Structures are given as structure tokens and as C-alpha cells.
Amino acid sequence: MLTFLATERLLLRQFTADDVGLLVELDSDPRVMRYITGGTLTSREEIQGDVLPAFLDYYRRFPGYGFWAALEKTTGEFLGWFHFRPGPDDLHDQPELGYRLRREAWGKWYATEGSRALIAKGFTEFGVQRVVASTMAVNTASRRVMEKSGMRLARAFVADWPVSIAGDEHGDVEYAITLVEWEADLSRLRRTENMPSTRRNRI
Image 1: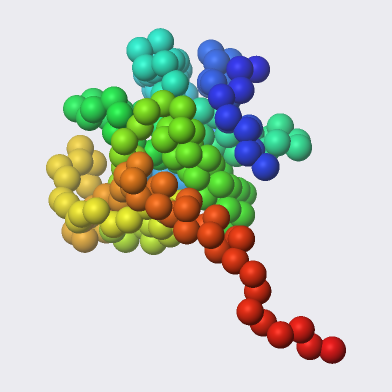
Image 2: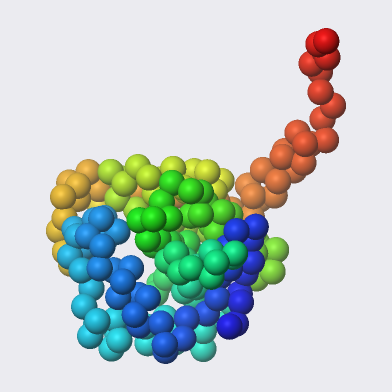
């Protein structure tokens, strides 16, 4: 297993050709696919012929970037995936962050934990200058993850997606964080952690 990143609870590793079943299971939950396809499931044929080969090709074309299988560190259970890579028309130092997790992993801060770690790795190891992420405006859960990861609302926009799903009429939102902003946030956090308590001890 080629581990790309480890956090307190997660291991992020490269996908392999043997991971077809894991991706099929992930994309077989209509609620997972709600804000992606409107709940339409991804077929095994599409995953095997298109999706997984595209994931694997990223490792060759963009070293350090790509799609990463997220495993629960203690059990090795597959939780979903994160991606951290430049979009088709984006600069290489401005990658896009994304995530898709099984429903059982929702609400447990896994998405935030993985996102924060990827953002930090990008800024400290890969010369990243800005990280972006986008979602439907009505996807409040995903927006909270972006905010908890330190990202700021950058813009609202309307995209011409190939599939129209409920909520499209409200448009999409892009969140972002720059290296300067990330370093400033980190500095504030460190100052707060080192600040002596002003509360009086009570007996």
C-alpha cells in the first residue's frame, strides 16, 4: 500500500486496479450521489473503464496530486476518497480539493480532517499558492467542511453542468484559501495556544 498521507484517524493511499469494487459500492448510494448526479448511480462498467483509469493516470501526469483512497487508520475500512489536483484549465500551484465519503463516515469530521491535512501538505511540500473547492450552493454540509478547513467563500457562480439536478437553480459556490491566509491562520492558532489563561482558578 502506497500511503500518501496519514492523519490522526486516516490513511490516504493511491488507488490500484483492484479497487473497482470499493468505488462501485461508494457510488451505489443515492444519498452519496445526491449533489453529484442527482442520485443516479455510477455503473461498474463506467468505473472500470473510465473513472478508475482516470484516477490512476493522475499519479503519472501530476506527481504529488491525484485521487486518494481514504481508509480508517485503525481498521483499514474504506471510507471514500479525496482529490487534490489541478483542474483541466488550472495552474498547477492552484489545485482543487474535493471529497466523496460513504454515508457511514458523515458527521465524524473525517472530511474536515483529510481536507486540512491535504491543504497543509500542499502548502508545505508542493509549493501550492492557492487551494480551491466548489459545490452546489444548497450543499450546506460540504460548505461547512470547506469553512472548517479554513477556506473562505470566494465567489458564487452558475455552471453549465451536463446533468441538471434539484438545487441547480441556486447556483454553485467556490471556496478558497491562499498560502498567505493559511500561514496567517496558523500563526494566530499558535499564538492562541501559547496564550496564558486569564481565568481565575476557583476552589
